[in-house]
Image (cartoon, rainbow, N blue to C red):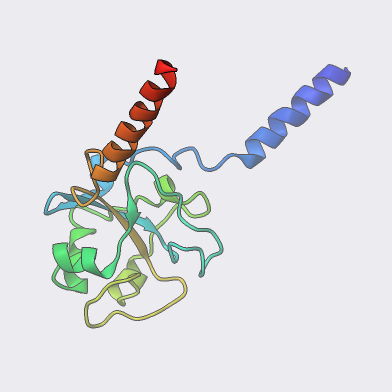
Amino acid sequence: MRVFAVALLLLTCTFLASGGPLTGQDPPASVLVVRGGYEWAWASPCDGTGIGCGAALTMHHGFWLAQASDWARDFVSNADIYAAFHAGGQRCASPYFDSGWQHCDSGDLANGYIQNSPFPGTNFHPNWEAFVVRGSGGPVVPEPGTWAMLAAGLGLLAIRLKR
């Protein structure tokens, strides 16, 4: 009986501690918007840093929180953003990035509540919509500093083995 109680307690604690079933998984193409070689995801109905709703986004699979320069590179206005994320229905990836929220607010998006958007009509709101992006903007091969560190480590290893 004691073993059963411990097993039940562990199972309950594990269930309560886990995020949503999709959080951390790579979102499917059906919820992504592709622009200029970058993949965009509507990740949360709240500020991506956790200011508005109290939970920061869970970043994974090479995504980062969209910044003004990302928006300016791939979109031309807030209306363009709205249209892109409503083509063929709402493209909401919130379940993949935020275990606290499983939806996206189209009304907030239409009103310009878009985190880090540089376009006119953007309104600050602690619960503004958060978007993430990934693509060719990040390094896909080791950086030169990484190679230098690898060479230095191998050199030190060779010196150590000679002794």
